[in-house]
Length: 299
Ligand SMILES: NC(=O)c1ccc[n+]([C@@H]2O[C@H](COP(=O)([O-])OP(=O)(O)OC[C@H]3O[C@@H](n4cnc5c(N)ncnc54)[C@H](O)[C@@H]3O)[C@@H](O)[C@H]2O)c1
Image (cartoon, rainbow, N blue to C red):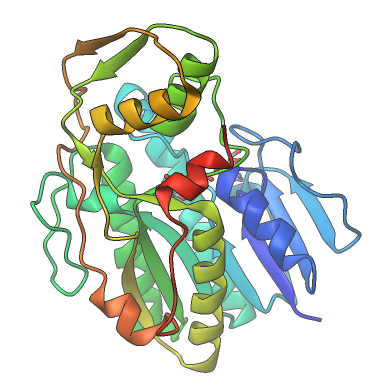
């Protein structure tokens, strides 16, 4: 049985990953509960939970791999509370990499497509970025730190530039929630919806795909010492307004919506290239969960 560390394991993605990993492995979850909870985490004797900020921990030993997902995860909040958000994101990342070095184990970490900002195309085979928020800068820092840890200490790592992740158990009661839970809640509760912008496009990837891919990447970075970055998304885009209309049709609601100005730091386009991950990581027949199929499960 392998032993894995999941930082942010009480958060949206971390919980899905922990549930999956703990079927066959022992999992240590570290989470300070700043945005996480125990809801949806299955009871399993293979899971040990440490409620703390990871940067405050002393040592964690005998780890075979790390999935680093903890972060202040809202770009919007990082603009409103820049110092606290970045201090947390940078300190937690430094600690996660230190644990990887101490254990000579690979680390898979959650970067974000936010590093591409308003670039027309997010290309993971080129070095172009456009940082529009402190959050994006923190993610970029994490990528650069991973490269340094590889050069200096031979720590194997892969960063996932995640596109918009959605699925069961996503927070819906906060102004920083993802767009899908916000739209679903408003439409189900027959509330008026404010749409900021509307024509901005997003690539929505189901959390179950993110879990599968994270595990594939950990296996890859275990077999071979590497330091790589991959875009992780489906390659399909939809505008926020069309997403609203799609969910409205699916929920058979007739609620009104109001268009507001775009929010600062919110990219207008979210489109990436996914050749690299297809070529090197995914099985040739890998199919992502289609958006309609994923949404149906949430309605
Ligand atoms: N959900 C998305 O669409 C998306 C897209 C791109 C990148 N990401 C990244 O993926 C990761 C997971 O995203 P999520 O949607 O599950 O976010 P989330 O906010 O639900 O989960 C993050 C978890 O980390 C915990 N946390 C924060 N700081 C901590 C610290 N210092 N020590 C311990 N725990 C701490 C929070 O309590 C929370 O449970 C984040 O790094 C996020 O930036 C997410």
